[in-house]
Amino acid sequence: MKAAVLSALFVNFYQARRTLMRKFCLGPTIYMGASSLEEVLSGTKKAFIVTDKFMHESGKVSYVSCFFNKIGAEYEVFSDVSPDPDMETVAEGIKRLTAFGADTIVAFGGGSAIDAAKSISHISGGIINNRAVFVVIPTTSGTGSEVSRYAVITDRERNMKYPLADDSLLPDFAVLDAALVESVPPPVTADTGVDALTHAIEAFLSTGANDFSDAMAEKAMKLIFKNLLTAYSEPHNIEARQAVHNAATMAGVAFSNAGLGANHSLAHAAGAKLHLPHGRANAILLPYVMSFTAGCHTSLTPAAARYAQMAAVLNLDSNGVRQSALAAIRATRNLIRKLNIPASFHEAGVDKKIFEGELDAMTEAAMADGCMATAPVPFRPDEIRSIFRTAYSGKLLV
Image (cartoon, rainbow, N blue to C red; front, side):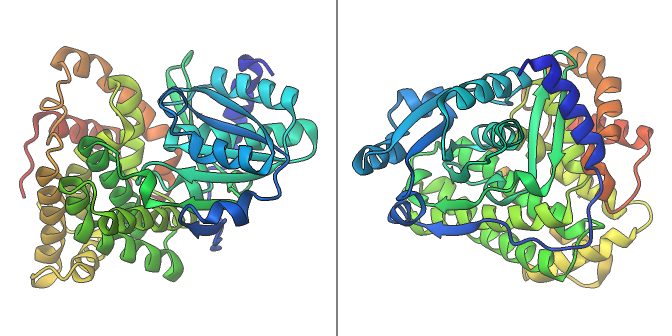
């Protein structure tokens, strides 16, 4: 399948799936630990492993390939996935998969490998009319992609990112093994951890939230605030690693069902135009979007009450809606600071001229982004532009 044809398919898919139904899907069966491979993959005859070059060349993909050698299963490794997977990568993956044939697709890696595998699995299933079993094994704790109905694919020709949403993107199984994230460098642990926190917060604030998604979002927030800093500063603390790993998956279940919000819309635009990793873009923007959404310095919005509930979930000492919402925002910003994540785009090294040159395009892209559909308050283009500028300067009044 050519990338141009795939581009048109993604545009149509993106436009058709921008609304959420009132339902709650539990998603894939979740297993924990390396011993789970026997139960999940023992019946495999031919496996197509989707990963990235680092996972392949470093030998980390042996986590699954050695198991396939052990049971005598054929496998092919597709390691062409790079950060922010694009149409061309998906098209090549589909070509390789259909030529090889497989009864199982295994996504092994971070969010990029998983998103690419989701798209390959979904589209190839329609081509060969026989969808392979789809198993996801995340090696970072953040995206929640192993349990979400979302994928983000980049169209480099249009310089856009398409957040796709459909139940057909859900994997069949997910394997959570904290041993796989033990060697993740602290900066990546920080970025991906705050990405997971953003998923939980936005799902909690989303207009699509319900009792079930709230339960997942609340537990994810608790686990992240309690364990992320430990996982960051003590990389070999396996208990903290597993807690954050589990939290990322819980947050994935929450946002897969409830939707996200403006923070992700702005982060998608900033990531594409300013070439920042997705988790870092989310982390930089989060306090600014929270502050605007709550209206703490102008007029309180209905979203402020939800931030006050977030403060209660985190046992933050505060009184009244305004002060409770401010406490949630301050706690979030303090966590981000302790993780040594830049507090602004300027601090992240983004050139002012480049930022201003891309500002209109980022604003337009954010307004058109599908995640905006479930934002808790409406956003005007001038407000989006103002948030971007505030996030560049780093001047937040909390």
